[in-house]
Length: 600
Image (cartoon, rainbow, N blue to C red; front, side, top):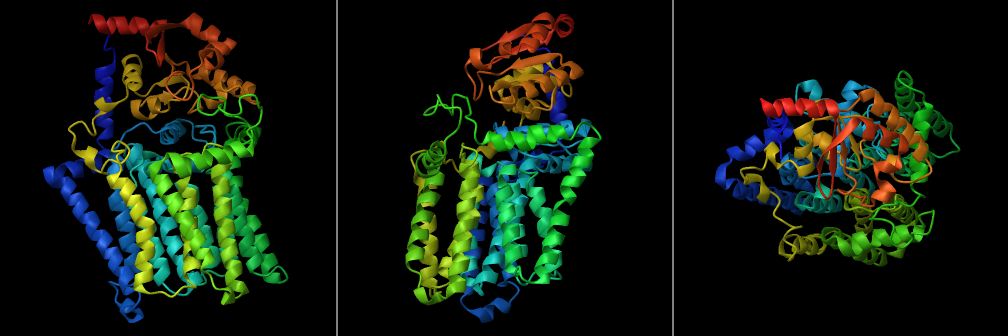
């Protein structure tokens, strides 16, 4: 096979990666030497023991006056535990569809600086994409590590808010410490890439818990009711521009805060007006920004309407059609069935958490005393309602992938805090709860026969090729034989890692081909937009990845079903490579250029 531009492209990628988060982490890991893995586990074990000791000492209130045993010290240990357990994954460049799509959109946004116009990531809004451009403004590379660092920061915000909310609701720090630390251990020891690496659910989850903290914690410093209402409104409307399916959660928190202020008072009405006015700020900025580039109507069609109707339309792919092929709609029963299968049966790490937490929630509810009072029962009912709404966010889109665990992980912790507050807080009961929650997970994590899924977290870090561009997937390497780094490439199918790992740009705003491929109600709109941007960018290379991921039926999904695009490809492009999973086409001009390179 001809090498084409591959070597020069790899040199450019190596140079570009030298300033990325992934390589900074890899450089530090390499500096640890052969004992790095042992050091990793030694430090992680030390942090876990430190956190457990802070839970132990919480039973002696007088000891909490020490700065080393205070709540601030506890939160520091929690954050360090999660960070240390997760940061090796910053350099893992395994294929990740959602992250690749967001990274590709972020890079294109630098050239087309407008939300939605720079990159369309289907269910993910611009506030998932725009923050990922931060490394560029510091002279660094936008890579997987920078995306995961942003997602991890959102995880830590949510975890800290969970503790603060629990402390406010229970009036003590004992159970909040126990539950928060248990969740932190879960987070630190997760290894399933779809849970560890995905950023898309972490961002709205962190924002939702920040809203909850503002709504529930009476000790938020220097913020009156109107100030809280303003921030809740801004955060709530922002969540709609991260992932629209989280909007019900944001609305529920806002409504709860206003009801809590008593609708009969003037303060509640002032707070309502303040919240609504604040909620208009982010949409107004984003829509004005978009209007400078194209019609706002496109936002309604391609984001709001598409995502609302997305939840009622069957995903016509080889992963989703079983069980309801003949239906034009996606029945709720099928969505619930898929969520149950993934969370309680198929994925081992999800299974351990889902079954154990469900049994603990039921047992805790049965153990509640009837004389707790209406207020406590009401708060418990609201917490269960919030957890149920969080599960609805999982069921709603109808895929229930593992990374949606982020949506139910911390709401479950909040319910645990409220269930446990009515029980006698003693060390035996506390550590028994932690053991019941953690042991099934750790057993599956370290003693399961499924060693491929549950590999030790940092085991892959010290291979000599762990952070070299030569680990690029075959489709990315072969694309780089014909395309040059930094130029637009058109992709037909679902493979955004071509853009993220190959350092080529998108020929259109569609980071994944879902909406120009699947025969749904809005297919005509997306194909018209795709064709327009294809012609404007004039890509020298066209990659057909129908057989690589999600799709396989060429008669149903192939670019040949798009007559206008078919005409352009057949008249202007030549097939230069074919494998069972993908095909690569190049313009005649590019083929001639490659022939000159090969002859030199």
